Length: 84
Image 1 (cartoon, rainbow, N blue to C red):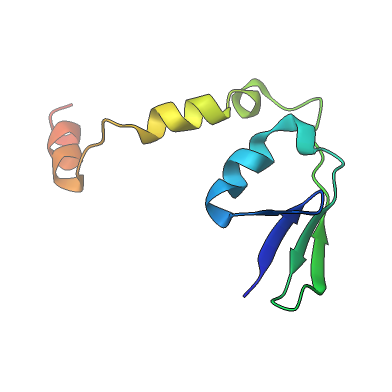
Image 2: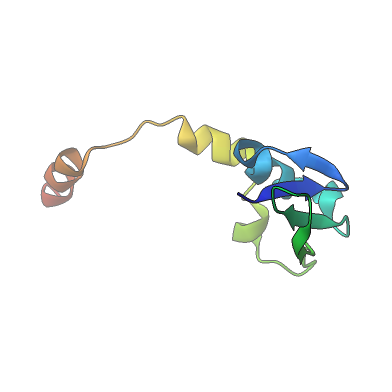
């Protein structure tokens, strides 16, 4: 099992996406450690200043809004698409 550490602190995998979306992690050491605590990998996050607008629009709030729905089933989508 691999565990995620950000700035030396353990981070649950469920919280990883929110943590990585936070601009304050730029340049902070991110490590993957095995069960014994041995570092098995390191990651460096860098944000590009010249990202296109659509990338900048992907914020934690926007992700949460879209995950809240509404969603179409495949059947509903096919019905809606065929009406166009």
